[in-house]
Each structure stands twice: as C-alpha cells, then as structure tokens.
View (tube, rainbow, N blue to C red):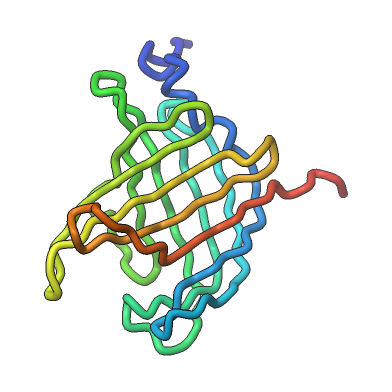
Length: 171
C-alpha cells in the first residue's frame, strides 16, 4: 500500500481536520424583510482520498429569498474541500438539491481554525462577491457565515449563519 501524496500530508492540507465528525447546526437565514429566521440542520464531515479532500453531507430546512423560495423547504447539500499545495489555497465546491451541480468554487486559506473563502459572479442585478467565513470555536463548535457584497467587497452583508456543535458520541 502506498502513502498519501506529500501534498496531502502537509500540515496546511490538514487544516480542516478539526471539522471531521457529525454536527448539529443552528442556522440563522436572512429573510427578504431583513429579519432572521432560525432553522435546524445537520452535517456529517469526513476526510477522503487519503486525507486529500474533506467531504461534507449537509441536510437542513431553509428559506432563501435570494433563490426565490416562498416557503421553507428541506434541502440536502454536498461540499468537497480540497487543498492545492502549489498555491497554498483551499477550494470549496458546493451543490445541493436546489441546484444539483457544482458551481465555481470559493477559494481561500485557513490557518489556526479560521478561514476566509471568496468567489465572484454576475447576476441580472450586477456583479456580486460572496465570502464564507469559517472558524473553529473550541474543540466542539464551528461558526460559519456567508456574506454577499455588491460593491467589490468594500462592504459585506451577512445572509446565512450557522453555529455547528459536535454531536455527542454518547449513546
């Protein structure tokens, strides 16, 4: 049996290892009227490909006004995170049952359990930038926030926040 490639053994390539496990999630999703609505969710995170990738299986109830949703719905999502040792950056690919294909990745870095990842796209309303902030909040908690900017990142508006808590292994 062969060992994982050197790039996958690099400590920077292991930066998401703290997230591996099963998590209960308390979400806050921005609504069209500016209020926040709370929803439950869960996620299961595993290392894959000998540690070269982190794969997340997410499920929860949401109401995304920015996707034209009128009523809450349960969606399932899948993310794949991979580390590029050449650039020192991570890529986060996401797809879900609302949009069942991988879009352009969010890219960025993570260090000491804190990460920032960005991507840009065009909409009929204009150019947008998205930013995911990801932070370990102790050994058994992770905070995640999605923010949007319509002015090239000069200002940001949070639209989706998740507080993840590691599911107890006690039975």
